[in-house]
Image (cartoon, rainbow, N blue to C red; front, top):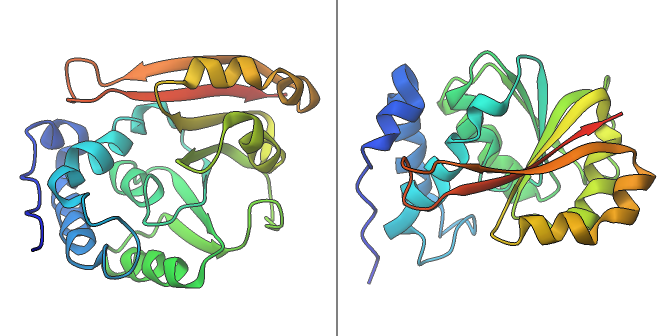
Length: 209
């Protein structure tokens, strides 16, 4: 039996504003095709909005106008969601798997996201014409493993804005060697969405110098 798709939470309107209709189309497409195309698991439909879409959208205010990379973009969480919420930011979605690249490209076209470029590559092998201002990632790897994949893509003074779970502070503690090697400054954990979302979102933010 197919699980019912979660009803759109009230918080969606506040987080997406006049971009809400685009977010609704993306949510419907992900609900319809996500499991079949191996983008989300079969148990995710009842929490599609709260756990996935709004969990990503709450990060949007942390982004600055410029170029933001999403490493391991997968289903477009967070890259496509953030591109919907922040049309003033240009996103580079970096994803190695062909079927996921196809999905990202289709959605970029269907949703008319002219602020998105999709690049098929592994993060450690991607060739960009210029460094990024910020890089994000969600559910890709531990912080100490993410640093070597993301920090080299960012310009001097740019930021890592990495979505993490409840163990984010411990991940910073465990990444001391990598933090020093890649010259990250002021790594911190931000807790987003308190009083707005059912489940808060944690982000590790650090400056690349």
